Length: 491
Image (tube, rainbow, N blue to C red):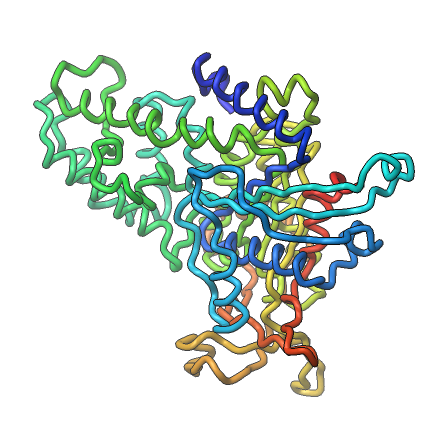
C-alpha cells in the first residue's frame, strides 16, 4: 500500500478497536474472516455453503478438526457489532436449497458469527478447558477493497490514472461519452452543480458498462459509484476525474476545486471509515475471483483481472500477528485467492484453473514487490451445481459436465427452461499458463484464448435423509479453504 493511508487519529482509533477485540478474545477466542471478491465471484454463496456445511456435518475430509472428530458442536450466535447488518444466512440458504436459485449478490457490508466447540489436539490444553472458537465472517463488496489505494492518491493522480486507463482497449469505446464531456468541461469556470452531476453520471455509466457481463472488467474504482446505497445523490458521490493541465492549481470556486473537494470527501466519508472500522480489524481474508469469466471475455479482461489483483494484494500485509502488532495495527496473516466455479470444468482441469490463478497472483505479487508468504491460491466451487460424465463422439470418449441450466440460458441455439438437464463439453484450459500470459502481454493481434463454456447452472437438488433432513451442500475444495483460513486456530 502507499506509505501513509491514515492519520494519527485514525491509527489511534484502530489501536483502540484492536485492543478491545484483544480483550474480548481473551474470554471468547475469535478470528475475524473477511470475505470479498470481484464482480459475480460468489461471495454470498461461499459464506452460505461454508456455514451450512459446518452446521449440517458436510463432507469435509480436508478440514482436519472435523475429519478427526474433534469438533463437538457448531452454532450460530449473535454477532458482536450491533451497527453492522447481519448476513442473512437463512434467507440465502433457503434460496439455494429450497428454491434452487442463486442468492442476491453482496451490495453492502454484513456480518455473521459462527462458533465451534472443539477438543484441542494437545493433551496439555485439554486439561484446562474445552476449546471454543468464534468465527466472525465479514462480507463486503470487492469494489470497496479496490477503493483502498485511493487513500494514497491525490485528485490529480486519480484523474490522470483513471483517464489514461479509460483510453485503452475496449474501455476507449465505453468511455467515449464521459471523456467527451470531461474534455469539453471548463475546469476553471465557476462550480456548477448540473455540470458536476452530468460528469458524475457519465463516469458512473462508464464504470457500469465496464462491469457488465459482456465485458467483465475488474478495475473499477471508485466502487461506491457502482453501489451507492444510502449515499446516492450525495456530494461525496457526485464527482468524476477531470482532464487537468500538467501544472497549476484550481481557482477558488471553480469546477476543479469542487471536484477535488468531493473526491477528498469520498475518501473521508466512504473509504476511511471502511478501512478503520472493518478492514483494519481483520485477521484472515479470502478474495474470490471469476477467472473463467475473464478467460471467456478475452485477453483484455484477463489483463484487467491481473491489474485488479495487483491493487487488491497491495492492500494486504500478510504476516504473523503478535500481541503488539494486534494492538497497534493488525496484520492479516493469511490471504486466500480462490478461483470459483470449478464445477464448470471437468476435474482434469481443476489443477489448470489453480495454476492459471496462481500465475495471475504471482505476477501481481511481483509487480508490487511483496513477498508471497501467507498467501495461497486454489480453485474451488462453493456449491457444486454439476456432476461429471463421459459421452462417445466419433468413437472417442469425451469428458462432460451435467447440470440444469438456468431458465433462459442458451446453448448452441437451444434455449433452456430451468428444469431440463443437459451435458456440455466444458472446454480445456491451457496446460502452461506462462506461455499464455506471455502472449497476452505481448499484445499479439487476434489472440484467441482457450474456449471455456461458462453456463449458468441452477443449484443442485439436494436429497433428504429418512428423517426429512436435507443433506449438506456439495462443494469442491471448500474444506481445503477452511483448513487454510482457520484450521490452525482449532489445534
